[in-house]
Length: 133
Image (cartoon, rainbow, N blue to C red; front, top):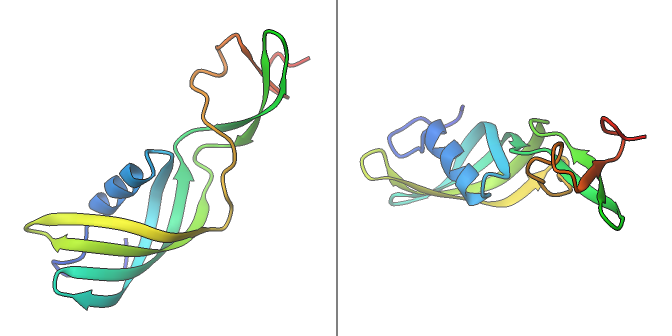
């Protein structure tokens, strides 16, 4: 993390944990650069940019058969996405921080949904996947 570095600036660990929680683990903060834009007591606002990724491979349904759902992989987990956002922070190193990311803009928007165990779940056929004939 680069940017501000005083006692009122949330740590990179805090930002990563709270970002993941805010987006329910679907988005992961990989790197961030913050620039303070305003201060009001222990409330601070930052302009943030960096890289994020998804926590899961994402799939989009393309057909529904009697016993199967045909899906296509639409996003690879770990693929870097450039982002910018507004970061609002309340607190300091002694009290801890509460952060909220808003106005999130991404270079690409991940599409699809995670499907747990899709490769071994017999009701899914992955288009262009192993065994797709």
